[in-house]
Image (cartoon, rainbow, N blue to C red; front, side, top):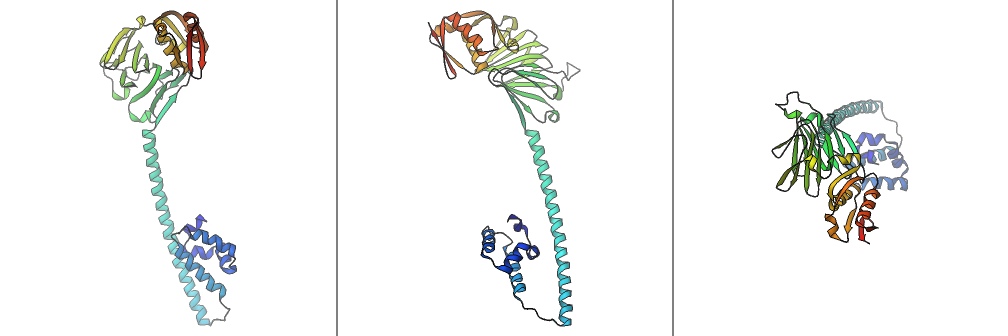
Amino acid sequence: MEKYDRYSFEDFLEDDDLRAFVRSGEPAAAAVWAVWLRTDPSNRQAYAEAVEYLGVLYSARRIEPSPAFSRNLWENIGTGIAHAERRRAKVRVLRLSGWVAAASLVLALSGLWYWQSIITVRTGNAEWRTVVLPDQSEVTLNANSSLSYHRAWRWRGDRVVRLEGEALFKVRHLNRDTTTIKPGERFTAIAGDVSVEVLGTTFTIRERRGRVSVALLEGSVRVRGLVLHPGESVDIKGDRTRVVAVAGLDNPPQAWTAHKMVASGMTVQEIMEEYEDTYGYHIVLDNPALAAKRIDGTLSLDTEDNVLYMLANILNCNIDKQGKVIYLRSK
């Protein structure tokens, strides 16, 4: 019945269903029209006039009009038709104007949505994924991480991404003059409250547990006013900023890209945290003192059991899995 909301007096007169209802007066048809009238349409007056008009028309007795009456009647009908056509033309113009205005509004809203819209790529437990950005820079996400950037990347005049978790960045150079970087050539990676300004380079960012670590492998980056050189890393927690040589780290910052840890004096606590970040479990030691124990060796992250069984053997513990919590209980 929604189509009748737009009907004029003339439309109602031409409607076969309404004419049948007025002619027959069937209760079922009357009930259908009553349902529509209860919606309180704005054109109910036109409907009432059409029903009244049709009622008179169908109840009239046939008479033989005089020639003069016939001429006047046809003149009136012709005038009415011309008037109706003019009204229809005006309605068509108004409808066209409304469609143009609506299309313009939809286009403006679509443009605003496109400008502000964010694309977010996420990884789950034990999932690694490489994202190719519109400028052909590559970002490899570690497990349980996400990367966000504007959908209108090419139009905004900046290159800004936001990271949660851990990633390896291979940023494409856009600038030819390394001494003068234009705004559209600059690449900025944001992790937590730390912004990493990139001049075209390869580096890792780790943002977990309230700490942000940036390790530079190639090129140059600026972090909180510090310019890192290849082989340097910076560890930030709150107001504390500490620069450390990548070679001195107890686990190479890019080792996870090969799905492994290369432990060089890593504590059990650090290994457990890496495992938790990768597989989404929480590990509980029944003897907390074991967390400080240091371990050397290569640990595979290809399956969730590899690291777990290695820890259990080294610590002489039994493994007790309860949902997403793993208890390592001393034997």
